[in-house]
Image 1 (cartoon, rainbow, N blue to C red):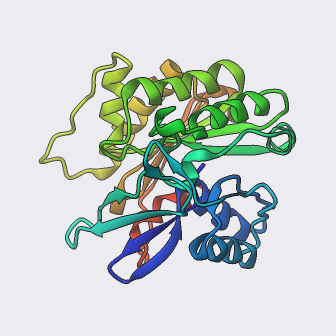
Image 2 (tube, rainbow, N blue to C red):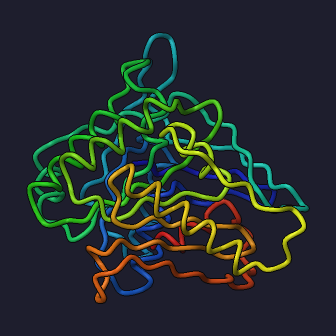
Image 3 (tube, rainbow, N blue to C red):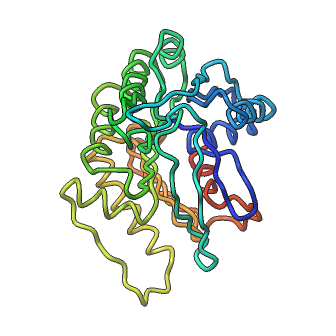
Length: 285
């Protein structure tokens, strides 16, 4: 997926959803590797140095020389300027395009790693360019998902809808690839993305009453919607993050001890992190 730098008001932070998940899992003493492409530049070298220091294996990382694609600089390490809303703490993003992470190549080492992994985490943002500017990451990630299906890995799809870098077709194409060729272990998205995916799948959303004061009931409604989306899209679990209100997890009967569908809720925790853009990736981990 993507390894890049988030430019926040407080400085530069290493980011990218799969990268964040790998770091969080490493902190939980889970052996993790990250497959992405960075530039052969100072930011790329610093990204790999920090990943190594956080215990994330970087043998699958790829490096790009300084190149141009269709008159666009494409070899430099990715940089995203993120602006954080002081009230909601939500982030908006401006991507440097194209960047090195748009050019991940599927190779024998990556194929072998996917086949032998216990879990593979990919994000929809990897599809942002398709094949535009000669980008290869979207194709590489789909091949990784197919390779994971040759082994026992569960594949997690992290939905990241960053305007204008997504189309319904590209997002659903990723999901269909995983459902048809892999073990679709979990779909992760936020409560703003949920109604979008519902509409793309031909499902009707159930808007919650603005005057509802029972957050548990609201969370359970989201869980029921997540269950229907999971069954429609082929995911065994669906995790919906809710910002400061925590998260909801739907688990299908195929993965629960009781052999029954389950919905779990968590009200969330107070966090002092300055990198709000990567907060939900702790939930993914």
